[in-house]
Amino acid sequence: MYNIPGQTSNTPAPSKAKVVAQVDPASAASEGATAAHTVADVLAHSQVQHVLADLEHGLVGLAPVKQRVRDIAALLVIDRLRKNRGLAAQAPSLHMCFTGNPGTGKTTVALRMAQILHRLGYVRQGHLVAVTRDDLVGQYIGHTAPKTKEVLKKAMGGVLFIDEAYYLYRPENERDYGQEAIEILLQVMENQRDDLVVILAGYKDRMDTFFSSNPGMSSRIAHHLDFPDYSVTELMQIAQQMLLELNYRFEPGDGTALEDASVAFEAYLQLRMRQPHFANARSVRNALDRARLRQASRLFAQTDKAHTAQDLSTLSAADIRASRLFATASAP
Ligand SMILES: Nc1ncnc2c1ncn2[C@@H]1O[C@H](COP(=O)(O)OP(=O)(O)O)[C@@H](O)[C@H]1O
Ligand SMILES: [Mg+2]
Image 1 (cartoon, rainbow, N blue to C red):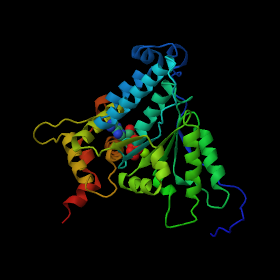
Image 2 (image 1 turned 90 degrees about the horizontal axis):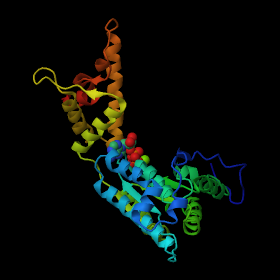
Image 3 (image 1 turned 60 degrees about the vertical axis):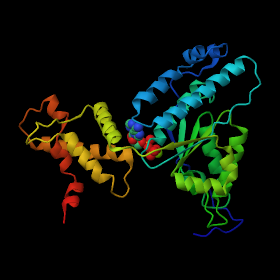
Image 4 (image 1 turned 90 degrees about the vertical axis):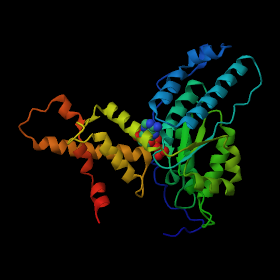
């Protein structure tokens, strides 16, 4: 389809912008916190510790990311104390960039960040709106500004998470409407930074290229967090944690004929990591989902057996080994 300059088609398609988390359940810092003069007071009034503890213990690995989040929380707490002492303060710039491969926890950490920003009184609501280029950029002239503004309106008071943000910029197309979205974002990032935090996410190399051609965007991003790939050990811990949450477990082996299901799963991961489209923790979740399907089929076939709670919650090595991946890997 062609865009005829000056001609607008009827109306832009409605935005599919996804509100991932509704308003943070905790109330914002406010009242008590405005009188606080100690870090402990601010922490007590804000309930931010729960989020920090959740981040610390709920997520496997990510040590450098967790450290950066704690640093940002510290900055916000001290900023609160400064305000309470009447020290002139412009809200610190909090726009961020999360780089890393798929499934490394960027969206998960962004959700926690939204809660931290809310509990420390930086945004009014603490919800997160996750979007991609298609939610911001229209296909026809005149559609981009209303789309971008609608998304910004939805995100106001919380965090706007732009996944694969570099797709906003398409240098090969000089009349690309992405540029229009970038300019509107830049204005709002500057003028309304006390009530909206923008997090750009995506692959590190593409983000670097994007920043080098968009210095305006680069200069407004105060915090760069890099999410490393998980090691096999971490992926195994993530798997164990996911199973625990779902009330499943890997069947232990008997040292001889019966293989430990976790050994089979680690062998699976070793193969999966070398495949295209490997997506770290997301691939772990998907693999466990498929193993649960196989377990269900296995139990379903035993029509007359009274399945115990243990039967129902156990994934066997065979449930893992039945993956197609093992078949293709051993093929000549
Ligand atoms: N460190 C971690 N510990 C436990 N689960 C994790 C961890 N990182 C990611 N996950 C899980 O993996 C899945 C993908 O994570 P997500 O945050 O969507 O990754 P990304 O946004 O980087 O693609 C989610 O189900 C999330 O809960
Ligand atoms: Mg994501």
